[in-house]
Amino acid sequence: MKKNYCYLNGKILPVQDAKISVYDIGLLRGYGIYEGITTYNGKPFRLNDHLTRFRSSAKALDLSIPFSDVEIEQAILALLDKNGFDRTNLRMIMTGGDTISGIEYDTSKPTLYILAEKYTPLPSELYTSGASLITHEHQRALPEYKTINYITAVQVQKERKAKGSIEVLFVSNGQVLEAATSNIFIVKDGVVITPKRNMLLGITRKVAIELAQKKYTVIEREVTTAELFSADEVFLTASYKEIVPIVSIDDKKIAGGKVGKVTQVLMRDFQEYTEKGIW
Image (tube, rainbow, N blue to C red; front, side, top):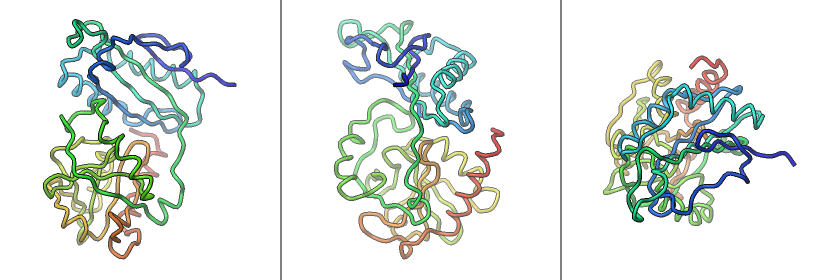
């Protein structure tokens, strides 16, 4: 059986041999940051954007990344080569390292590891026929940063699966925020609209905005739940999902339950963009 390899604090080793301390503050206190990256043709997608966001999250939590961007990129490329998957999803996690007195940490001794997993595509019918969402009242702590606090996201998975939905959409006080692992867009009268506050600025979201701006008006602003349900189109963006059309939310059809034309255009443009590999 082929071994799967990960990166841990400067070394590439088999996953089963990778160990972190039971005193790690990521375990004891849930204190850490996270980044999800995918690849195309063996190349990490928009890596500079991901590393910029990773450093921003680290700064917010007063974590010190012990490696340069070049060193992290070299580690990722070596990890990709070692695993040899056709396409890879990467999960990069950093914590403050071992605790001091159970709740503090030494900023000079963090734990940094990168997991590599074989990419598994979503069922093709979700892209051709559309997917569904359920909503949940919630706003993440430190929503602008990608922390390892996924407690609510994990708790709602049972309900999501029972409803046959692809994602859980977080809403708060009548405002649409983000999905558990994705960003949300709506289209109204040919205008592409996406929330801009109290949520994570996703990298695939950024690319979708760049592509949409070439053909449509794009507005980043608050989006109400009323606007969500009356939208002409709705779609999600995420590193591991790309662009996914949404045709139903809380068992209510969006625009008759059909995949919209703007979404179809952006899905094609995104596919062409990733195939070119110039990013």
